[in-house]
Length: 68
Image (cartoon, rainbow, N blue to C red; front, side, top):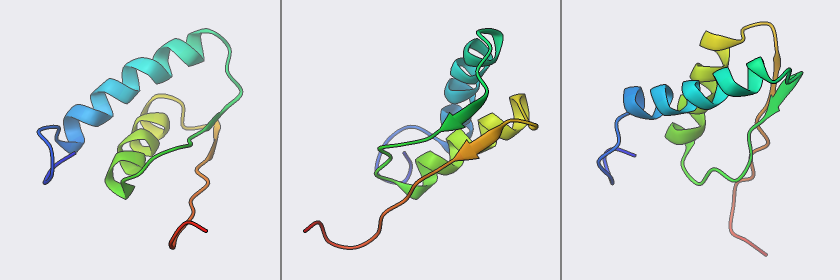
């Protein structure tokens, strides 16, 4: 993800939207967004979920701080 990598927020959102569409077509009830290392990346995934499936729940568990 920018600024550290070549992928923009819009590009990432479009890639996640493709996955979200497939999950919605398959009958998913909600989204659990896990293992994101960058807040911008999880933001892109959340934007995609809201754009494609605004009525479905999103669970974005986040952990902050140094690993123990």
